[in-house]
Image (cartoon, rainbow, N blue to C red; front, top):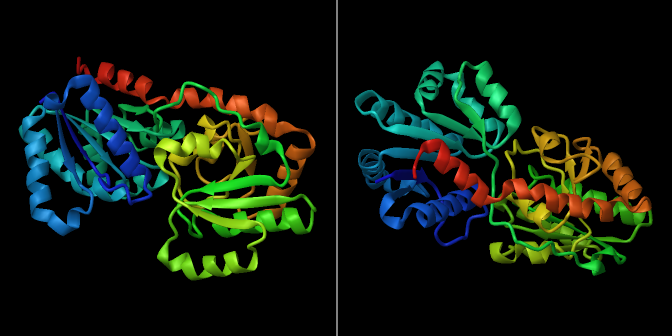
Amino acid sequence: MKLGIIGSYDEEHKAVCGQSDKTELFLLKFRERLGDENVCFTNMYNWKKAKYNKFLSIIYTFLVSKNIIIMTSVNGTRVLYLFAKLMKTITRKKIYHMVVGGEKNLEIFKKKNYIEIAKRLDGIYVEINNMVEEYNKLGITGVEYIPNCKEICENYLDNVLRNEKPYKFCTYSKVNREKGIPEAIEIIKTLNEQKKIPCILHIYGVIDDEYKEEFNHELENKHQYLNFCGKINREESCSQLSQYYAMLFPTHHPEGVPGALIDAYEAGLPIFSSDSYYMKSIINHGKTGMICKEYDIEDYVNKIEYSIDNNLISKMRKLCYEEVQKYNVNLIINKLINNMQLR
């Protein structure tokens, strides 16, 4: 086998998970380019339910593949780095780590033995430019910036109706406190009730169980400008999001490059985000969205009002579509195939 991939994705597409989407997309693209017969895959999704079988599959993938890509977030990395250490000790396999997500991935390096394993890998690819330097500070070289990515539609979809009042905002993420859903609701409430700017908020995603009761209470009390719309089919995300005025993303989660933000850029949808973690390096303030102070509702409201009054949103839309081109999966796969000499 030219390539073995060890990752995690939900084959039934019930999970709302960037890791699942990214793993499935990379598997599909590598098989398209190299041929099904040249790509071996071990799916780690729900691995704890079948540990023995999964471990056998991991070993098989390592043994039959000349090159191995580990595509995991922090929990999977803890397990698979130990396999990588073993294989590096007894074979000359080339092993790469495609890091999924952001800052949390640095947690495993609190244990020095994981730093030593990382140093032995043939390449580590991170979603955020800033993370390259953070790995380097730990003494881990061979780290390269490879952004999260997706299939990008060829034509920019601009729906002129999204400029009409009431202004339609959306969120697109897991529906919980960590993703800033309470703040998004409060922002829209303040715009309507204090600033007298007519707005509605459509919330997309899957509701976390521990947030369900609180969220349902919010829906009941603010139904006039709040709507829960469920999941968006990935194939329809661009056309669905292109009807909105802007996206709210007041996250507190240690994000990498969320797939939802790539979808938003593809739809020409500017993003109002918190300044937490790496968001400043993803959103070009004043061009593809606005960076706002974390937890600061007033700052969000003032920047949205300013953007509306100065017609900045329309100017941002085409810049968003230009920005999304660097997240094109075909460019990324070409680069990886060249880097790994898989031709």
